[in-house]
Image 1 (cartoon, one colour):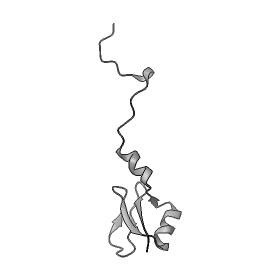
Image 2 (tube, one colour; image 1 turned 180 degrees about the vertical axis):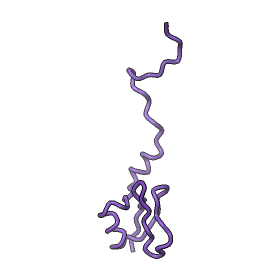
Image 3 (cartoon, one colour; image 1 turned 180 degrees about the horizontal axis):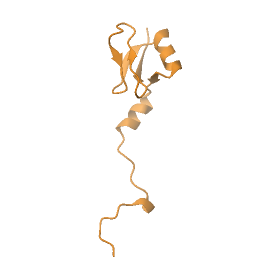
Amino acid sequence: MNQMKVKAATGVKVPREENARRYITSDSNVTVEDSAYYRRQISAGDLILVTSTDNKKAGKPADKPQDDAQEVNSVQS
């Protein structure tokens, strides 16, 4: 069967299909079987399907500030 990477929406804990006492949280991505149970959780908005572009975004450093929003490092009078 196919697999997919998911994570829970912020503030939600989703029980795993194979063990309802273990939960998927928003802290990390989890690889699960591509089943009707997880597809329903995605449709309901409780789970988020993680794509490869999401992984790249998570690893990028924060954008540099724009010119008009630059931090002032020297004392102005």
